[in-house]
Length: 401
Image (tube, rainbow, N blue to C red):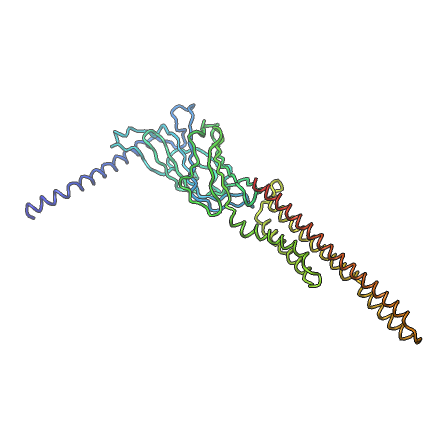
């Protein structure tokens, strides 16, 4: 190798060699730092040098996505990013001595952790414990001042108390309640003012809008509240409008002429359709007598009105056919024919007159009952329309308020 080639290689390889050496040096110093920190460290010891001092734990909950809000089972399924922070007085160092290393990242199963539980969690990861961080392989980041950040990402199933009273224009609230299970024994307190429920990383849901989040509570109990509002357009188009249309059709069953023979079939078909819709809606509602949906009350009212329509149509058909004078007219015709055949006198005008009178009375009776059946149809249609208008106005007024 000539001299120029050597100089060129040395000039361009020197900076990379310096950086590599510096990185190796930093890595070695970080190893020395961790060895120093954990030389006499006991993770089961309270992380304060004076045992009577309090430990303050801050909680930051980031909601990442909302996969499901099940009103029937009263559960909220969400992906959360949960961060705990506290100060460990045994994990402090002078960063200037250790090449300005301010943070150390390591497994959480090496350090002391607070015992914090989410009271509403039912997915199996309710509490933060020594075993839970080992199973979840959680990691912690430690600052040179002793401030520890422990982060966990989890799919939560939280038990909530939902109110279906204003379905489908409802707003639901769910609360994450955190408590320190060993707080009174180790003077561990949850800090309300410095804890937060963040929605910066939230990915929107197609059915629910996130309205707000806030934090309330005391040193013993920390409540993180999330408020969600339903997007009602899909349910309005697929459930509400069809039921309203069916209720209008139910009223117009009384306008069908009795002679067509379609009144009973139409009424029964509408009644069965209402029953199917009622079953579908009841399967999505919680079985809670305290907060029954007003929309479910409206659907039940429509089912009752549809059943009443079937009954009244049956009565109208009964009046129209059974009490009409058709059978009586046929009987009179047979009697008059037989009487005329047996009567051999030449003057039959009197007998014919009596038969005509009897037939006229029978026909008048038939028309009277037909008229009564049609009047019953008109009256029931008016009552049905009034009941529909009243029920939908009352229901919508209560739901929208």
